[in-house]
Amino acid sequence: MEKRKKKQRMTVIYLFLSTCLTLILLVSLHCHSESNNTKTKEAVTKTNGASAVLVMRNVEGEEVTFQTKDNIVIVGTLWEAAKQPSPAILCLHQWRSDRSAYNKIAQTLCANGFTVLAIDMRGNGSSQKNSDGKRVKPDRIAREDVSAAIVFLRSRKSVDGTRIGILGASYGSSNALLYAASDKSIKTVVLLSPGLNYFNVLPTEPSAKQYGSRPIFAAASSEDMRSVGAIQRFNELLPNGLESIILENAGHGTAMLDTSAELTTRILAFFLKNL
Image (cartoon, rainbow, N blue to C red):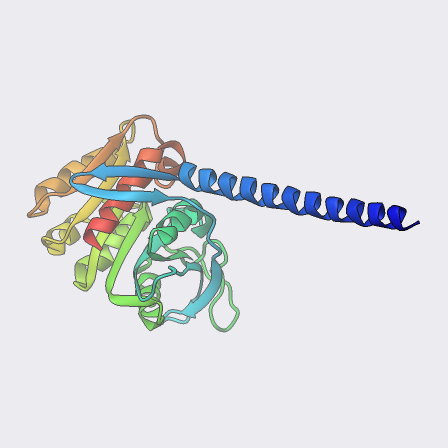
C-alpha cells in the first residue's frame, strides 16, 4: 500500500514538472515569435541625409470634436504619441474624401513619435453640421477648419505647440499651403498632388511666394500633369526650392499612399528631419 501511494505521488510530481516545462517552452517560443514580428515591422530609410526607423503598428485613435469660429462642428481622429509633448501633424483630405484616408500613415507617424490629427473638413465625412444642428455644405475654402484644428492641437498637453506641420492632399494641400503661408509658426508642410488653382478658388502661387524659406515636400504621380507642373512652379517660386518625388502611375492625392510604400517613408523622413 505504501509503495502504491509513493508511486502515485511520483506520478503527480512528474506530470506537474512536465506541465511546467511545456509552459516555459511555449512562452519562450511566443517571445521569440514576437521579437521576429517586431523586426519585420521595422525598416530603415535614408532620404536626403535623413535616416529613420520606419515603425508600423496599430495605434488606437480617438474621435474628437471642436468648433470653428463660424460655428461649424469639426470631427477628427487624434492619435497621440507615447512620448509627450510631441511634434504634431494635421492631415487634410482631398475633395470628396474624408479623414479615414489617412488612417494608415497616421498610425505610422504616431508610432514614430508624432501626434497626428486627421479631420473631416466642413461638409465632408462626419463634419456635416453647425453648432445649431443645421446641415452644412462642403466648401473648398477651409481656412477656418484648419485654423480651428491648429488651435485644438495647441490646447493639448500632449503637443509641443511650437512644432506643428500640415499634410494635405489635392484641395487639402492647397488649404494647407494657404494657411501655412499666413501662419509663420507652422514649421513645414507636405503636399500630395498640389495644384496652382483648384476649382478656380484656391490660387496657391501667392502663398508659395509668401511661404518663405521654410522646408516643404511635395509629391505627384507622373500622369497627373497639373500636379507635376504645380511642383515645378513651386520650385521656381520658393527661395530654397522644395523636396519632391514624382511617382509612376500612383494615382492622385492620398491614393498614392496606398500604391507607393516609398512615399510613406519619404514623408516620415521629411517630418523627422524638419519637425
